[in-house]
Image 1 (cartoon, rainbow, N blue to C red):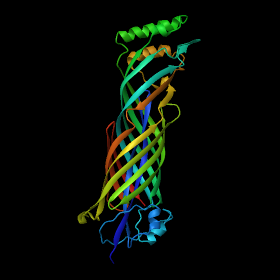
Image 2 (cartoon, rainbow, N blue to C red; image 1 turned 90 degrees about the vertical axis):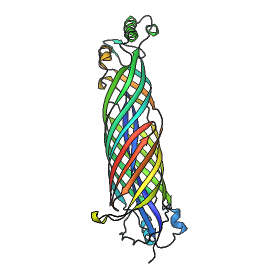
Image 3 (cartoon, one colour; image 1 turned 135 degrees about the vertical axis):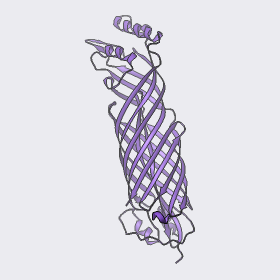
Image 4 (cartoon, one colour; image 1 turned 180 degrees about the horizontal axis):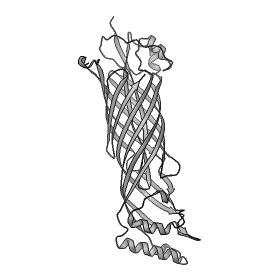
Length: 365
């Protein structure tokens, strides 16, 4: 029987990571783990099935259609299979690894709760300037996903992040800004200013190590034509870090477009013909930009630690940081090789203002 391949379905699953920089954080979801499975039909699909969003692909092939048992998911899947479509396996599990580097712009850092006995230091005593901040992190995650509609995938993820950031920090103070009656404040401000002028508190390397747990949910909407495919991934993550109060929230939108190639089989390795998917895309991030925590959780530079130990005599000191990403957008280039219907491997590289390398292995069932 002449089989006319007609459409394709793909799934993207996104995981989230966060990066803590100086006394600040930037949450950055990792690229998705990608799965692309051919849909074949013996006849042209009706307009009604196209309306429910099956991703379309027209290729020339005369392959036999593998048998697939009916499953609850995706909804409308039974109708699609009855029309001759081959759907991807409905469920997937991914093991993912991400290595990331990015620059952060810190707008302000303020301390509060400083002082000793009955004396409280002014909250604006320290004038802290932050120069270049570079963050690096490594994240490992596990993600579960399911096709709920032929064109819609949903997923949940959990992961661990470890990393560090290096910031160039300078600390100054203006004695003239302290009220005339605050003699202790003027003395401390004068001492800080003299240390700044002498270079002791200029261009300090502030290294911060961090770790945390990330949870996330997301959805992917897909479409396609011929061997071309496109998708939009929406992802929400929440990360709890050991050096911050509460959690950091991030919303990410990642559009991608790509092309699907058929690869020959390898009889010696008992591998059937597979598929290689290549794509380009971009990622937008909207991340919480104000962070608070306990000063005792931070490791200060040696030049600053003695001063802060005196100022934080009651161990009640707090920090408040406002910051933003250098760019909310970066570019992506990725590839996925489908070894079998049930297993594939993926890699993706991010560049521009944020550099990243992502690898993933996926099993579908």
